[in-house]
Length: 326
Ligand code: GLV
Image (cartoon, rainbow, N blue to C red; front, top):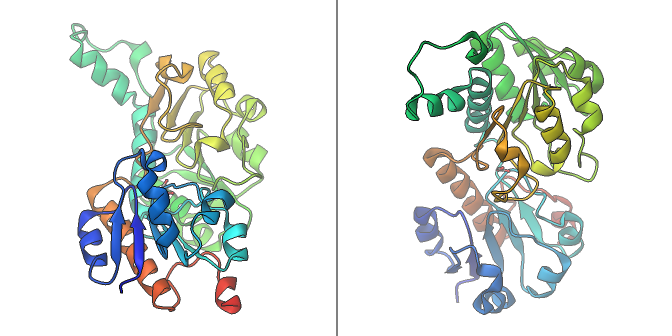
C-alpha cells in the first residue's frame, strides 16, 4: 500500500500528479479544509502533509498519529510548532533559495511603485483625471543613488541588496543577527545598529522571519526614528509590524509612504484603515507568487516529502535533530 499524503493549498497540479506515482494523495484545494470532516479523517491516516500555512499545532498533531513529515510550500515556517514536531520526531521542511530572486523582485516593485507613485498615478490616468500635465505635488522621488536599509540580511535580503547595488547604485545599510560578509563584500552593504539604520535610510526594508522576538519590531518608536521622507517596505510577515503605528505614521506624514505585501491578518479586512490611505501601496502577499516560482517551490516541497518518506534526509530539513533521534 502506498503511504498516504495530504496536500492542501498551493501545491502545483503537475507536482500532485507526480506525487501520486509514489503516494496515495488526498487533496484539499479549497480554503475551508479545516472545517471539512474529511480533512480530519485524512489526518488520522496521513504520513506526510504538503501545502502552505496550515497551523501545525499540538492539537492538530494529536489528530495525526502516523505523521512523519510536514512539508511547507513556503520559506516562512511560523505556522509550524517546530519544537512540538521535533519532540514527536516529525520532520519539518520549507522551501528556501528558490524564491529569493522572485521575492526580491516583488520588494523592488513595491519600492518603485511607492517612490514613483505608480499605482496612485495609474488610478489618476484610468479615472480620466489626466487633463493637465502632472503638478509638482504629484511627483515621486528617485530610488537610484538613495540609501536602502535592509533589516534581515538573509538570502532574500541579499538578493535585494544585489539589485540595489548593481542596478540602482544605492548605498546599502543592513542590520541582522549575524554579519553577512558576502553581502558586505559583493554588494558593498554596511552593517549597522537598527536605530542608526532607521535614522539614515531613505528606504527601510523589513525582511526578518516572524518569531516572538520580531513581533511588532517596527512600531511607533521606530517610525518616529525614520526620516519624514522615508519609505517603509514590508516583504516579511505582517506580525513584525504594528499596523496601527504604521497607519498613524503614514496618516501624520511621519514617513512619506509604505509598500506592504503582508498583513497582520491575511486576507486583510477591507475595513483595515491602512487601505484608506493614498500613500501606501499594497499587494496580497505575492512575494513568491509567480508561475515559475510557485512551481519551483512545489517541486522542492515534493522532493522533501519524497525523501522524508523514504527515510532519506530531505534537502531542506528544518529540524535535523529528528534524524539523530529516529
Ligand atoms: C512566503 O511568504 C514564504 O514564506 O514563502
